[in-house]
Image (cartoon, rainbow, N blue to C red; front, side, top):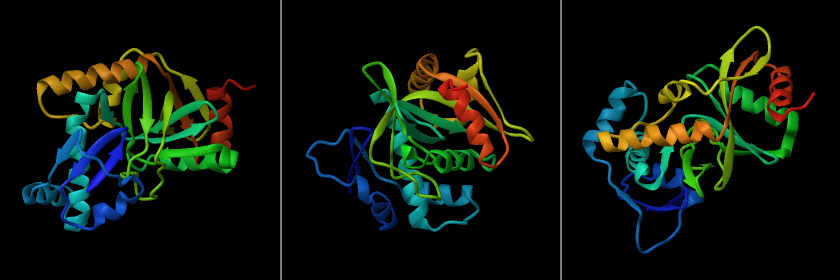
Length: 234
């Protein structure tokens, strides 16, 4: 199967049909791949063990495939970020949080508030790739259970850490130590060279984005408060 993601030609020697269905918006044709991968039986079993056999082999093949793609991305000034990411006007915004905290819920509140002005890039795991020394977020087939993704990209401008709270409050964070805080939200590749490169890319991303903490409830008022802060509205 041949797909194009983050402007990269990726050749996946897949066996199951799930990954092909998942990637249908990204399937293309090319002669020379930038990345070629094949998932082994052992890697599929490792994924199944990691989720207590909750998912079948085809699903686990797709998950392992994306992980293997992520391991090769530092060679192309890129990495996988675990965040709900969208475009609003001229801004690329990503919401980061541990699973179950509410990043998808908060993005949905923005969609409810602004309607078609919000374009979802990826609901869960976009690729961040540098182009002309600027970080861009790209849609990919791997986009969470809501299956929210667009085969497009946006210049990333705002990184937002979501914190569940009893009131809505958004504040701009100091960029000190943010790189380390982001490590839990990034697929870290194997090998010291690739690890160092990924850390460098994360640091570059942070330096070129606004970084926010959004304490929020689950209702629409949370988007009203956070959008005013992020967009500089009074």
